[in-house]
Image (cartoon, rainbow over all chains, first blue to last red):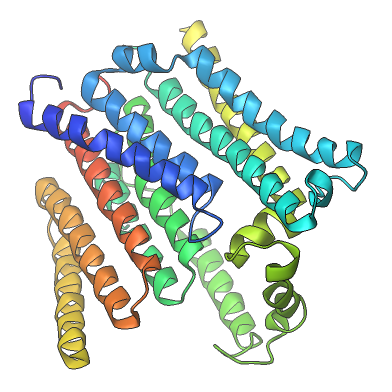
Length: 138
Length: 156
Length: 88
């Protein structure tokens, strides 16, 4: 699909905006609508758009399948790690009160880390499922 | 939705989730609406169209008698409509889902968590363990899809 | 001023209903693709009007998601329509 000039230029213009909007939904989820799940899906759909327009080989040069698998695992590990960190610092599992000097800023840090974990896992699972369906050229 | 052409069926599913997200938005469920718009209308269209490559495009007409499925459908519809009469009325103040926990969350989020969005605080802090289960379910689903498709690819 | 908004909302809802009827009644695939795109645009307009009536800013995020999703899914559907597969 590389030979359609309008699609190519428009996609090049819009993909940074899509990724920026995904990051906004990710990090502004505490104040307005959004969160890790939605941000992961939006980032993944922007990346899938890139794959569709420029071909799947170019897309794999940006984010390879192996890297995507590693990031998917890191997301879950980050979530569980934040939970275990709560136990180490003297609380229950997934209790963020003791992360900082007072309880509300500790909660802010915990929620921030957890949303990053959710976003990483969801986005990379979507990208990997897309790769798995479109991998073999037959 | 009642189409034998799977391509048209996928498009009508997209339209359905767009309108569904609009209804969620009008009922003030902003987070749910965002999720429905991104997941239902965006990603699932792409993934269904990708999976359409592996199967037949048009479903053949079913020649089997469909009496059993018709009876099942009618029974299910009747029982679900019977249950509807037990639900609380729309917008009722004393509905049991709105009385105890919701009040607590709405009152105490500002002091205990310190972020304005109550949905995020419930999702990530009060009910963090549920979210952990959700993420692990998505992780396992991704691993299973990769495993199944890779095996099929090697056998061919 | 509110009256203008309400009249516009009713007109847009009528247009949505007409396009859904068109989607159901026609057999042509290409018209169905166009109708899907049209419906997405109408729903973006409807969301922005509702947010103007309620004078909140939260809804404009969702309108933006709708526009992005509509763009992406139309490109994917058209690509599938052209060569029967997504990746070439």
